[in-house]
Image 1 (cartoon, helix red, strand yellow):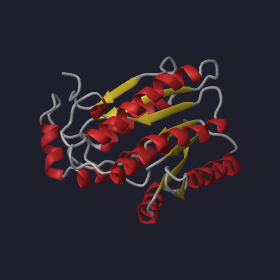
Image 2 (tube, helix red, strand yellow):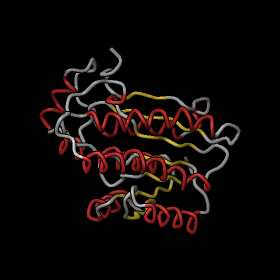
Image 3 (cartoon, rainbow, N blue to C red):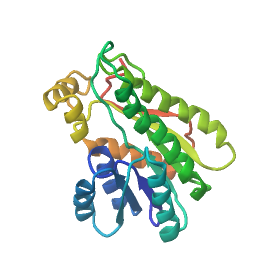
Image 4 (tube, rainbow, N blue to C red):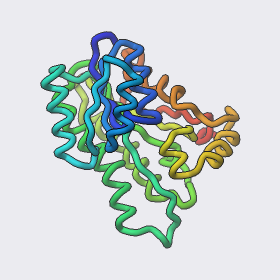
Length: 241
């Protein structure tokens, strides 16, 4: 990825942070985004000179405009776009509220859509778009139906956009993690529950964000040049059996 420019949304913590670190190690200059300034500040301190943080929410179109205006002004173009920012809450059927539905779809569906649409004009031949999906998009999960529905929508985005992008040289794929020990996963589900879920996979342990980042690096690179519209699971086998 030497000399390439990447954007990673939700890059202050978890999978986004680990992926930004991996991209930088591979030679890219990375822009990370997030709603909270403190995690972004810590991430920049940890990642060094080849990262730039732009605070904002992917569900706010003005924030997205500011992000991509910054990329255009400073780098001119964009090679890799990892639409990773996501949000989920455990709420069973019967207790789902319009507010919870709106919060989840605003980030996970609207946010992904407009992150890609606003970043696309900066991309060209050889560009790679990666969308964060989830095993929940293909599985039933109690009390997680709204989140799961957003990830099913993201999966279809990649299928449809692969056709929209035919002939542009830009690829779009989905990276779907299984149980991965991140700060947001611990907040939504609980650390013990995540560890238990990981232990129940064929691999036998919960995922580390760096393991997901390694797959993101593959999808971002020319090694995956014959892939578009695909979904790659990094899930310890959870959704494969």
